[in-house]
Amino acid sequence: MESIYLLQLFANSKHASSACFPCCHTLQARYNVVDVNVNHTQYPTFHCTPRPAMQTTPPVQMTTYTITELAREFDITARAIRFYEDQGLLSPKREGAGGRNRVYTPRDRTRLKLTLRGKRLGLALSEIKSLVDMYETPKDTRAQMDRFLGVLAQHRQTLEQQRIDIEMALAEISSHEEACAQMLAGLDSNAVQAK
Image 1 (cartoon, rainbow, N blue to C red):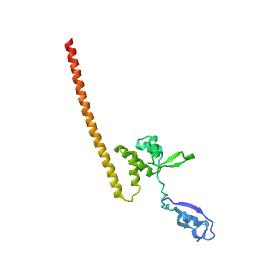
Image 2 (cartoon, rainbow, N blue to C red):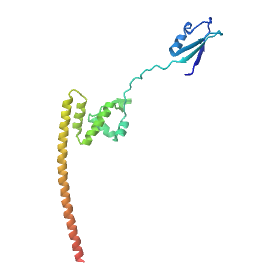
Image 3 (tube, helix red, strand yellow):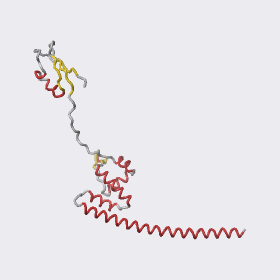
Image 4 (spheres, rainbow, N blue to C red):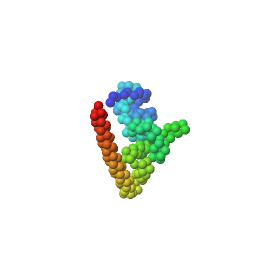
């Protein structure tokens, strides 16, 4: 590290040191005094190097998100986020004039992420809310898992029934398509015979 000649102080004695001057206490707090040269001069030169910066950890600031940032991250609209807020799934803090700016915490971000996962599974918002609320109270993990498994089993049953209904509807569509194709073939053959 490059040395710095910081100051020259008047001294009556040729054997003065940095301890002789009251102003040097400030110097010693900020610099390591390496050498005090008092030989052959009336003004001692303090040869100092800066002390390394103290390793202090900055205060931990909690990450926050705006509604725009969350909308962009999850590829949804700000209106959808406000809707989830109205449903009680999110509870952002309000800042700014009249509380116009919503400030979302990591907790809100996690709740939004879980809400969107639940929507992809096809769960109702009421089911999602009860599941998300359950995970915020880690009192009895077993009860939470049992409840979640119950919701998933019920949802699976609904989807299985929907699959049966869809397969029946597709079979019915196929039979109508065949009937229409036969009718068209009959109409085409009648048209050819008429010519």
